[in-house]
Image (tube, rainbow, N blue to C red; front, side, top):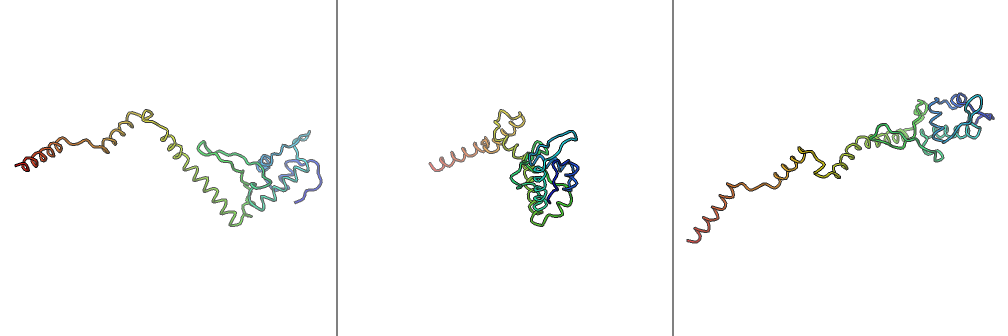
Length: 179
């Protein structure tokens, strides 16, 4: 979409022309690393910056995502401290999702699935690495007692009655074989 010649593009004009919300406008500015200029009427984009916004809008209509557009930056999102990942902010307008074909939808679902795998696995991976680095001194008394019990079970002490029976059987076998 080609814009008419205007030297200053205001947020309301841009959102209306591109059919986007204000939050999407700000996300795209951040992605493109555009810093709006200011005058007495407020912030505005230059014709060159507006062209870049239009080009990104067309890219999103074609691909359903910002990623891949002129190697633009990505925003870092962290939903919780267990998972931090570099992601682009998804477009929330329904028409962008309506333009997705089956392949793009499959890719989106696959990427979401990979994020879920990392989100679910991360706490277990952290615990695994913590356990690998711990020594017995880091354990509680109850945990050290469990280890002692497991070691005893794995290396049982001989039963005195069994030892006595075996010794007596051996003695008798040698005695009767000696007669």
